[in-house]
Image (cartoon, rainbow, N blue to C red; front, side, top):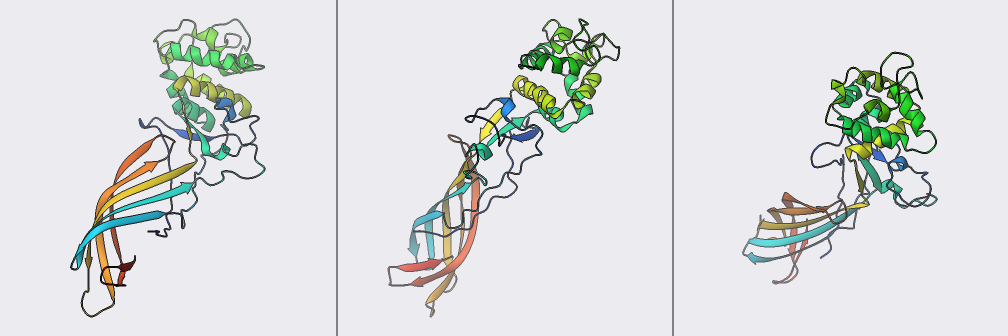
Length: 298
């Protein structure tokens, strides 16, 4: 049968299973060309996007089959609802699917984009020189101004041949990759002779929006940021209900109540289905059209 529904999704949040997601960044609305998952195509300056979905309204399908004995019955009920993300497929946009693509940023990328200087300094101190070298190389490989941005992160002495980064001495600082030197498991916080992570964090916070995007994007590549494409959420429910007619004598319309348990199978990203335990309580009215056929509302 067809069952009208008024489902709604509120306060939707997305993150990696390990809990490492610190922030969500939307795809640029004015990015040129086809949808491309490069970190430079995400808006690092945008506030946390609110991810909303259209109400399911009358698009839910639901059916049930069961066995009735006297005033009691047992039924198996299957239902389906689909919630499409709001903003998708608007005319005039360069990308119809841009509103459905998000980058899940981790600690370093998030703190850079949000200007959380002290947290960024602490997180930088936990980086190994091997990861920091990759980060520096990623920044410096950006065509045009990558090397200059790397020098600004290190501070005074941009473009010099020094071997320090984030230090206060004028003329002693270098680019990130040159200051890091050898790639190894040493933490940046341990190399106090050449590295000052608080100074680096302060310098990063003074960069322009475009320069911060380069730094945050490089962090995202090193940290292994995830990209999620969410066009819609589908929910398939399978329930086992036990129902009972509350009045059975002398009335044409019979009120009933049901309680059931089962599961919801939620599909958010293509190919990924998450099973969830579910329970349901419902009530309604039934009317006997014939001894064998009844109409239900509830």
